[in-house]
Amino acid sequence: MEEISPGLENVYIKYTELTFIDGQKGIMRYRGYDINELAEKSSFEKVSYLMLFGKFPDDSELKNFQNKINSHLALDDYLKDILRAMPETSDSLGILQTLLSAKASKESNYKYTKENDGEKIPEILGSVLSMVANIYRLKSGNNIIDPEPGESYAETFLKACSGSADKNKISAMDSALILYMDHEIPASTTAALVTASTLSDMYSSLASAIAALRGPLHGGAAEGAYRQFLEIGEPENVNAWFENNILNGKRRLVGFGHRVYRTYDPRLKTFKKYADILSTTEEQKKILAIAKRLEEAGVKAFGSKGIYTNTDFYAGMVFNAIGFPVDMFTTLFGLSRISGILAHITEYVETQERLIRPRAIYRGSGERKYPE
Ligand code: CMC
Image (cartoon, rainbow, N blue to C red):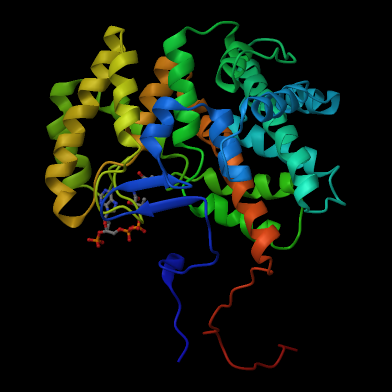
């Protein structure tokens, strides 16, 4: 008798050398390296290179990789036209999905080979940086620009967004880009894998991933968690809000729970550190105090069921302190995830390619006659 696995829980669809997660112990590593150590000591470019090509780059490989990324920062004119044509009410992630689809329209004959992928990936990293920076600029009423290369991907991005960025913010952005880079195969990466398994191009695969990232159960959680803090309003409201909305209500605590982790999400440690360092205004300190009280209430109520704080609980606060509004949070997650998704789809197509085509168990009516 066939059985289904609801939500594909515990279904394995590929082998990977990229990300290791131990959900019981709260461990996460990229190619064997601890995630928080990478976030503290490395850079987005080095870790992307590690994920994509299997080793840290030496100095000249790093320079070459950065130069390739930087040579694709200029946005195509047709993308600028699309950006300007988007309604003001469009959300930033929806615009990113649209721009990726627009790029895909010119990729119909893409062939996955190590050589092609090695050229295409830095192109995409440069191009998506520019897309996201310009989406932010557009939404904040600024003109569309071709970003100027900075010292690092994080610096190029922040300067393209708002002209300047201090060292702490660049370092927090770099860490966030690393922490969110990959998470094995969540819904978005799986969507990209399904698309790439048909040998569709990389931009189409990324557009599929971004579409899946959009939902509040996945990428939208950093935004959801932050809106939750805003709704609570004051630290002293936390307990009553928690009781009314979560314990006695029908809502889930956003930024809590995970399909894989039965303990704290390991990425939390670095996000929490930056939330502490960067929350300097009265408003930011208040939000942080609300978050900490809410986390305490959540762990007390749900910890025994293996439901703990996930990375999105504090990530929004960090993005906000860097200078981004709530509407950008999921898009920043998307920007960070691009190289992880590309690493997964190239790993799959290059080493294990097979069309992903699951089955459904039919439970509908038997044969019927067409009504005359
Ligand atoms: N608040 C309250 N109860 C929860 C929560 C939560 N955040 N998460 C899970 N539960 C309960 C749920 O009600 C259910 O209880 P019961 O067995 O009594 O009915 C039980 O835990 C199992 O829930 P589930 O929905 O079957 O678990 P899942 O593995 O399908 O869900 C999840 C994982 C992330 C969708 C869920 O924990 C959730 O909705 N969390 C809130 C949204 C959130 O923070 N999402 C970000 C996830 S991390 C980023 C990523 O990797 O995408």
